[in-house]
Image (tube, rainbow, N blue to C red; front, side, top):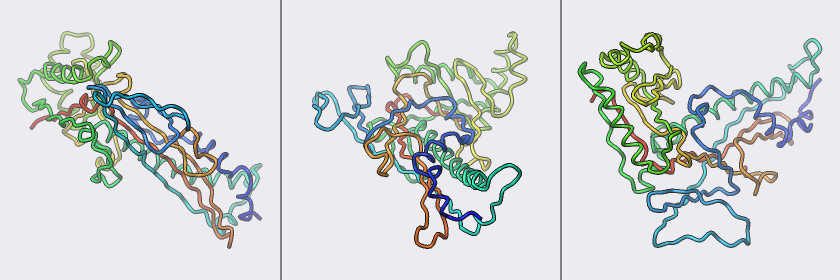
Length: 339
């Protein structure tokens, strides 16, 4: 019969679990799949962002004792941001371990590992959903806590930039020149991005359900495609897909099924550049535990905590120390289907 002693095996060590958790499938998330945020592993909890004129750059970490980076204080300013701490866990009790028996050719130990991995997968799903929520916040210029109202960082305020007024696409009006609205947004983003906007940079939009449907079905959008061979493609556009129009890739964003926890309001749109180097960063700080202190940060860390006094339970814990940064909030724009 299995006992809690099995959790002393190297398979449940901090290093082994951290390596294993990376193999668990992520919860599907559009923003993670688009690769918008550049990974920036750091050695400390604090990330410094330097503003030089209208250009913001990350300051690299440096070893103790090395000369500091030179900054012209008359022309540049530095802002410090702290990475956040995300932690989730589950408890596996002794009586549950006793109920695990071998099935077929699988050993009891392998059965226990399977059960443990299954529970860790749920925690990993919670963690990935939270990361997606933070990505969505950074793309809107405001990093929010899980309650959806507490502001961790308002990047517009931090960098002294006025939050833009939403562009009214007037999609409820049949005569609206939707193509021109797209060009207006493109110019706003491109001019704000300055030299960061290259020929490879594209404009993307995350839009709610009403915005997406009204856009695809708008009479002037349909007329635009009428004489094109792509007209058939327009008729085949479905929910939660990407629809390119006017030089912008419109993604009908599918968040959580309640359409509120992680979501774009149904009549809204957010615009941002894809492929603009350095605009979106994901800083990753190291875990607070001995084996990982002063090492390069990574996405997540897993740890197993055993009840050594009574051997009544073991806890699987998952930690992450990210900071999703928008270093150029002036390139972010908003839109509404109709005011």
